[in-house]
Length: 489
Image 1 (cartoon, rainbow, N blue to C red):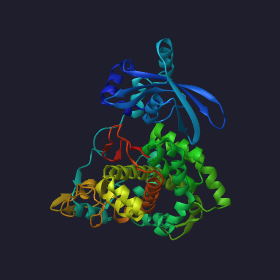
Image 2 (cartoon, rainbow, N blue to C red):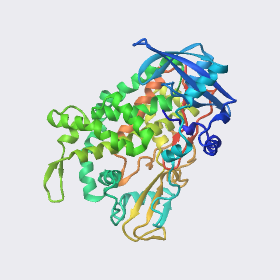
Image 3 (cartoon, rainbow, N blue to C red):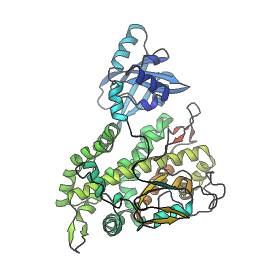
Image 4 (cartoon, helix red, strand yellow):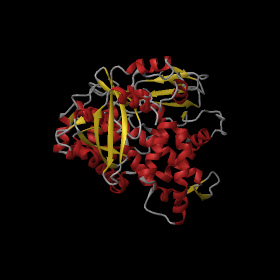
């Protein structure tokens, strides 16, 4: 188990770096708990040391070991209550907690912090290149709606791949990206998209909802309904698209959680390594005995190549589709769902409106995607010398479309910075547009609407937790709330 230093804040991370991984500077204000966690089914009990500290009034984890609950809500509740019910990986546990002092506190500290890496190890896992991608190219950015819309609708001049070969085919991640529809253009993109598009059309949304989305949503609410509080961002929003898409692949819940853990620990490369191990036996089984799921759709699909010949998708093609749906679909839906919930919780009249009439959610979700799209910037490559609004964009340049700004263009929307689902609906770029419009936009809408309708129906007086730090929506290339802390009842 590795620490999530994003919880600590910049000042603490800086100190962590300066002291090569020491966290003693947090020790004076930290509380040490000893949890006794007992499985309700197995009856097995284990003790879990947990250290946490308050930073500016916000509860942050310093160290934990042995499967402690995953969110600070639990830590606060464990201190305040002699016994609470907690949730770990879908199985119910009971937990009791007591504060420890003296020598016992020192032993717990040593045990709980033993898994912290040196700063060098942490840096290797988290370092990212800061700055624009493709640094050797010229870059242009469009901010108004009309220009962004013109770019995304001109798929001949502005494409997802550069005009010259990238290279890097020996890198498995690069190779998979190059096989992905995200980087395809023209006729090849249309052929591949047509294979899977029917499964994401509006008339198939009931199939997704009944088979995977609604059972997942109801089960998740079952897991925390009695507790009276939750961070919906982690305990709800993050799980729904992952389990829905994995369910449509025939992947079990345990394997889906394994995929999530792999991605959190190692990013897309870890997903690339773990996904084939889980998916290959399923693909082989569906080729022999198809079922009513998405992998069966893919193994039975036939692709027409450039010579007019038809053939079934290869295992690598199916892996590419699956990787795209998991990496692009699960993250964006999770974050847009969180953004939508934060907007509604900060404007409670819309929660009451949904309670009276759930169909209002259609307008709420559209306004959320306009007001705060989770992917506020997309980029394309110019394949010709193009003039936009008097600016000449040379061939080979990178052109960024700032959807976040375009969706708030004051020439198109009155009061564009306000979240107002009652406004007159107009086309926005929250799901993109043109040939590369979001493949799963209908599924994303359906998951968000179904999930929020269930929350409002089952959790009375749903509201932001007044005892936690208000959520913030942050990020550049991907925007999401820091948390969605709520209470009810």
